[in-house]
Every structure is written in C-alpha cells, then in structure tokens.
Image (cartoon, rainbow, N blue to C red):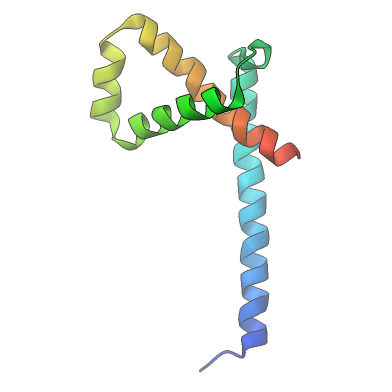
Length: 98
C-alpha cells in the first residue's frame, strides 16, 4: 500500500504544474477585469496598490454581509471597490507575465 518516494515526487511535480496553470488562469482573468476597469491607465505605486488589494481581499473574505454593509455605506467607496477588485487581477497578472 505504501508508495515509493519516486512516485510521490512525481505526484508533487504534477500538482505543482497544475497549481502553476491555475494561478496563471486566475491572474489572466483578474488582469482582464482590471484592464476593463481602466486600471492599466492609472499610475500608482506598487506598494500602495498591494495594500489596497489586501484591504479589499479582507473585505470579501469577511463574507457577503460585511461587503454589502460597507458597499451600502457610501457610493464613492462602492465605486472605488470595483476598481480595486479589478486591480487585484493586475498585480497577479503582472506577476504571471514575468
């Protein structure tokens, strides 16, 4: 029943390749959304963009009630949230292109 270490290594290599492809697909998808939202035209420091995206990710990880509550608290914030959502693809998209 035990697998030899060589077979386990092969499985790990396959899984790493699958992960790489999945991350590429996700980055491309989010990158396309970011471009449609106009983020390709905005000049922003990468550190600042990264911080904004982390904040956005926390908001969405908190669940829909938190995201809806914040969204309803101000229209300008809601609009900014859409741009930031698209931006989350810009960062991974640029990483995937390297």
